[in-house]
Image (tube, rainbow, N blue to C red):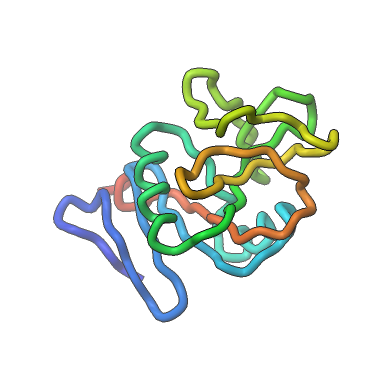
Length: 153
């Protein structure tokens, strides 16, 4: 599917069963099916991507605006502290990237590890703030792929 605007950087593309938005680094796709974080990651990989990671303020704003259009409930991201409590990172099959302290968007009193097992991250409405939850909860999810238009063109 080719959905680009004049500058090839930011666009919104709608098709029968999904919608997509891009930033200079990545393109995102909201999947309304609810799954555990592990299954959501697997489904994103089947689509050629991974669960979304938010790497900049630009991405945060674009993703929040996009989710406002398509979701009314929490959405999985690639955020996790499974390896070490309170050491949050973006995890996909081929990379693990530490979330910088100056680029966080946690909700009030988050992350709180309530119940001692909240090791995965969702973005929760209405402001799409980050929240730590149990990885086995079922949520819709946000997949990402590299923005090839921004990389090559």
